[in-house]
Length: 350
Ligand SMILES: Cc1ncc(COP(=O)(O)O)c(C=O)c1O
Image: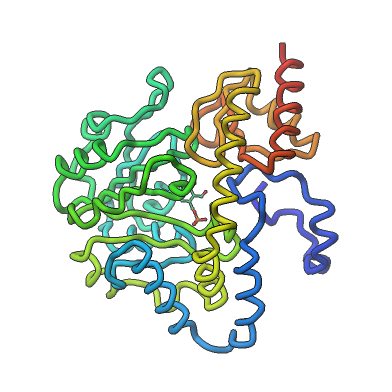
């Protein structure tokens, strides 16, 4: 079922009713604390200006991000979510029948975007036997001059980080014509710093970030890339005009300054993933994201049983991991509940 299926449109704006019937949603790695309160306030205040095109809010958000990351404003490529930025890369870089190189298992949209832009995809494999760790050799063995190459750290769905050394080796050993996109959608939850400094050192590295996770703005659709200055001009020619709405920009701007909400979101994710790793009665992998991958006897059975208890998790078969589920870290209370339920269901499989 896709998000949005089964919704009664007439009732949808009755927000209390919607929230009362909602299951515990641990499927999409959203923020269990909700949006930053500063973002809610900013949207309320700015809503009287929704008749205006968002030129000023886009410039203000781009400038704030440029200041945050210490780059030029034209190196910030905004999009409607990180997926929107991925689409911009596909459009800018892929010619007909070009392929991308992406991790398997991994985030499905890399391939979907390429296919939607008449490209194809090839993969490098992350192996369970190696704890899903990624080394440069694995990527380079699969490299065949693909113009777009994705590395995801922390990696969805395994939670593993990729070292900066690996990223640098991949960037060095691949052609200048290959853009290495380092997807840091879960970067704020990681104990490893962003690889953003590499953008100044390598002309073929871009960093991808989003407001959907640690800032709780998944519904607002704001993502961005920090791109090398050499690419900035080319992308200016193909970027969608006003690709992010004014209200999304002001929400993101407010969330950017709300360090308290972000820090709390990060610490809940870090504590929750450790709790899950230690208390789930099944193999899990140490995660640097806001989710944990769990190996279960039967992923479809386990996720169906959890759904019957009102808990939605991601079944691994859609991610190429048929014996696994991915569980988003909730609030501490939700996390304890899901661990108890999961252990009950796992025990019933025996
Ligand atoms: C690895 C990865 N990249 C990008 C995204 C997309 O983020 P956004 O909501 O900004 O489109 C996700 C969303 O789950 C993700 O897991």
